Image 1 (tube, protein in one colour):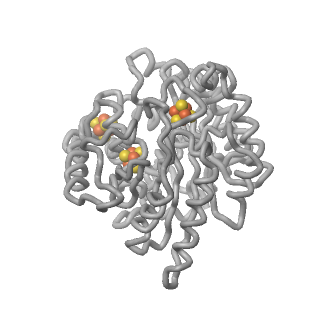
Image 2 (image 1 turned 90 degrees about the vertical axis):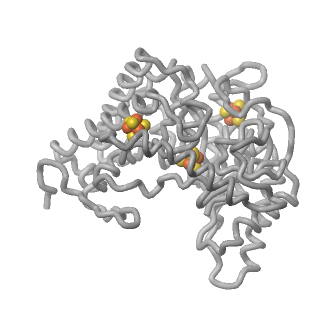
Length: 387
Ligand code: SF4
Ligand code: SF4
Ligand code: SF4
């Protein structure tokens, strides 16, 4: 179970592509936090992720700390066995100080998702502060603090049309910062066209080359969604375990108390048909079922497609970003997904044919766990797995 607390819309940055709308101040109150935790624990999950989102959640370190402590107290009062818990902070990393590091440090399990779009030039083109100054230096300082404090963190790099061709640079800039993973997140609100998709393919090719060099040097550094695309190949066309259930196993609460299936759908929190309940009245199961049904219309659209089992067309947020409606997509999604799948396959085929030890070790000698009902079909490639 994942509970996301959208603490406030306010943010100290003004990224030009931010999809969360106006940066007004509306802070979540303690009572909403408490009710959200109770709702998340009501089904007695075996594990709970509590994720903090915004806006910039570290604007309210005091509230974040209270939410962590309230969660731990609520769990301690449950009968045994207690669910395990992890805290996740989605942040621009410019406000990370010693207090934040101490709060997230072991023995607490925590992961920080840091938004960093690449090297200074790429990052500062979009991710600027209120005065228009680039935030790159502040992010790197925040990352340094996380590293010194031993906090696990992942980098999320938004991929925009204007910088898609520079993905190799993005990968190289992020690879040596000590993160446990890099996610390349295409901005589906961009006006992708044929030329920019071609640039994306070029950028991915360069990134793929850089990734292969890491494998050849004996290093495995997961880069999403390339890593996931290789796994979907290895798992033989079964649904990805992370396939989105849209509110089935996660929900997001905002300062107004509204519940959304996913933090990516909150925007300015104006209500509407993406709301699946309120913290005072609980989940609206009818609304959730209607949303899931609307989202699943994409299954009909994608039914004849050869790569549908490797495509993230199931992500409802992508539908909303592309068309404003659940269940409706555009060819942009197909083009972007195809570009990532093609590049993942190029990397995999190349390293497999070289019998690159780090690649073989990671993808062919691990016991990857298929999704429920799935069968692991590792041997779809032309050559046998080495002994
Ligand atoms: S840091 Fe996040 S919330 Fe803040 S402006 Fe940038 S994208 Fe928006
Ligand atoms: S590539 Fe396009 S048609 Fe195929 S599964 Fe993905 S979104 Fe659907
Ligand atoms: S809609 Fe997309 S971003 Fe939201 S939970 Fe589902 S897969 Fe994740």
